[in-house]
Image (tube, rainbow over all chains, first blue to last red):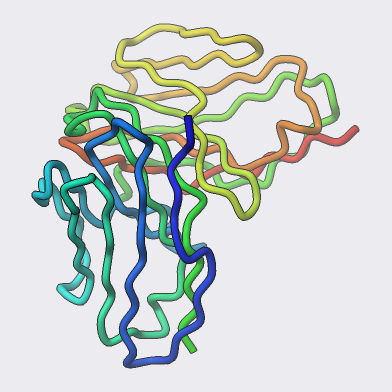
Length: 115
Length: 109
């Protein structure tokens, strides 16, 4: 079974631009979560989607948004990019809504560099 | 205070050593505990998952949870150079994972 896929793998943007990242979960998985990983802050939760609905949101500004499609694929968008948005963005999928008991499987990530 | 604290290391051990990786957490509501392994330039890979106090073993890996002291550990027996990676502990809370900073482990041949 194919794992979680993320596109693109690498991105370079400039301040003020916006970016859209894509995630395809494991086949049959309906929940998708997004995380940001930086050397200083580590892995931080952005948001979780299940059945096209955002179920949880982390402590990030409104510039970070996401959505999920009927086929469970998800996208996240970051508008008005800042230098501090440079990070590895990770997508994780699970079978159902993650009340804690659902294990999450991560994709390889999209590495974003903001200049 | 971070909800999950983990010594970032780096930790360097010789091949064959027993490795002990540790985390503490502050929120007693945490019930589900995971260990992830992350190789350089890869996404985290789920190693172990447990929800109760005590030990859980999987091959060379043992996860230990002590809810009374809010302490979780991962032991790696007979460590191999291929175990060189960053190890992240995580607690699940209401649909999101709270991660420690990760411990960078290097196993020298």
